[in-house]
Length: 101
Image (cartoon, rainbow, N blue to C red; front, side):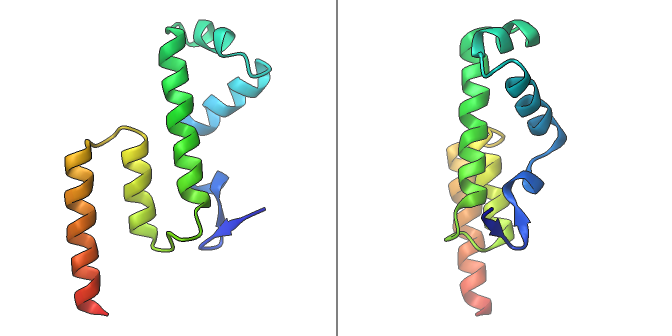
């Protein structure tokens, strides 16, 4: 299994993500059944799954070694911040990081 900063991608996920994955697997990967179980629309479940996939890709990406940048990118992938905020925070962090190297 690929590991980043001695943590596998599963260890980076929060309880809500793990519960979603568990339910998805137990429902044999049926997004329709998952939408019914959560009592939401299919597009809502699809969006949640797409965001989770992007989050896992970020945690698996070996080129992002910095834990703060990895977390920041994951928060953006989850939709917890808008594009402008993400770009501003990342830019300021990277500039600050350059100044300490």
